Image 1 (cartoon, rainbow, N blue to C red):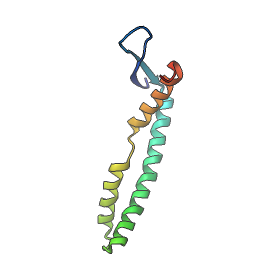
Image 2: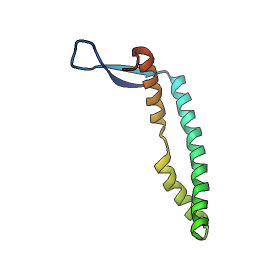
Image 3: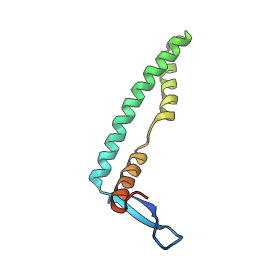
Image 4: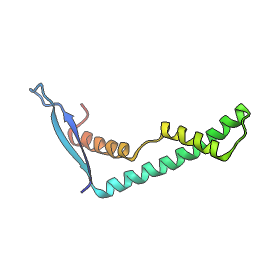
Length: 101
């Protein structure tokens, strides 16, 4: 069983939205997890570079643990979690099935 998420769909003639559950299969889920992993690795490398630049700009000594801790703090602010990628994929499928409204 793959990842699923429910989205509200506007129903003509009703003041209430109808909730539609959209699933992505295991293959699509794995693909989104891999995309999130690759993006997170790229982001972490950028965060390490940014942390090094911050330390150099401020004239601080570039102790490895300080740089890593700063990079982690930056990463936590920037990182996209794999659930976001899966939700994005299900929203894409929802839009294909029911059209953007």
